[in-house]
Length: 227
Image 1 (spheres, one colour):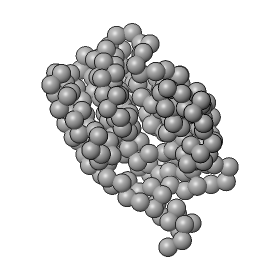
Image 2 (cartoon, one colour):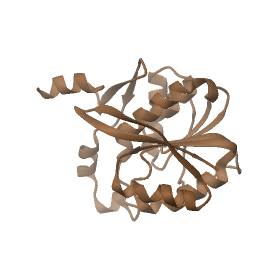
Image 3 (cartoon, rainbow, N blue to C red):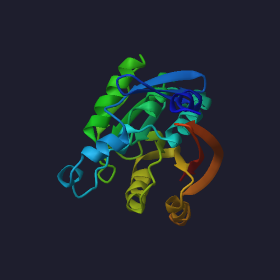
Image 4 (cartoon, helix red, strand yellow):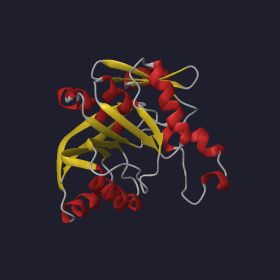
């Protein structure tokens, strides 16, 4: 099978001008981006990476975000009118989906280019815009317990994120609220669920599904976390 055929059958299609299209629960979303991850990575030097290793992960659409988008659509009724937080919004897929479903969404990323493209993609897809903002989840800028739902796609790819995310969950989740995390099956993420349980959170794997992207089928878990 050639590359073009693989793209057409994968659920993710590259289009001219660095646009990708992905289908989520019957709707096609069009996402513009600066380039692909490999190209941006190769163009970076040590100075642009900085001490935080600011790799441009935001430029890719990850399988975990696609599964999370499916879950948001399936839960449209409970999201409508609720205050929601999108962690590491990237190109804006899940923030756009939730906002289009009627949720009141704040969506942030660590990198300004991600937020700029997310805003642009909201216009491309003609949705009510979330509040897109730049923020470091190690220094959250929200009042306490203000979000009914918090979600993130593939945010647990480094152990150094575990502790700040746990603190953000505890400070930002409203009473009775829920956190949804899309997680590709990775060894590095396994310890975090036990850590969360030990810290008083309740975790539940609510679905495991295949997500087809770029000719490959990724296995993705979706977790629900409550306090």
